[in-house]
Image (cartoon, rainbow, N blue to C red; front, top):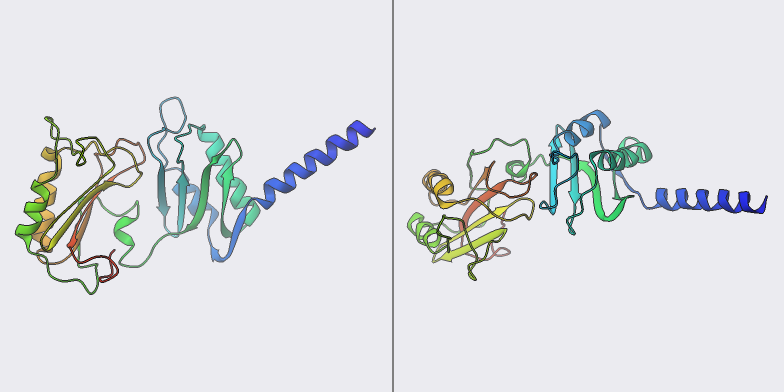
Length: 247
């Protein structure tokens, strides 16, 4: 009898701790069906597990946004991830929330609302690839397009044209500045940037041409090593963020 009572108390205590770990956001309403559609967009390996390269990523569907943070590169199963999100949805009911994955508490799951402002839309997963958005930065000085070209040309590259950091190593983010222009190329998921100059340069030229003296951003489908990543390329005035409103 004592053993049964002890086991029952232990199970109840564990369930209580699990529920208490979930944080609900009462002021943020979500639709479960929309969240499930966002969850369907997660890309898994052929063995049904999450790839280890993407350190963080998000997907949106209509008004629901899901975010997954995987800093240690763990590889849970698809079922474990979907069960984790459903646990949040079932506990928080109609509101958003966050929790850590039961099978690996290094993985953080979050459910919220999709960004609706002009500044956030270009970074949503449903925003069209290769569609330039210009002039998002506020209180920003003008850019000289030729400065952007010079900044781009200063990026170290491998023989194959892969972008490298200043130590000639593969990286997830490149940033170069020349006079009036600051150029960044980075992966959305923190994975290695596999994009090459041959693929990126025509897109960069079009971005600079279209946005001219304004800030600009464009997303690119391929070029991130992680299965849940994409590449962003941005140009802005070299004035520090804070002095200008960077988006």
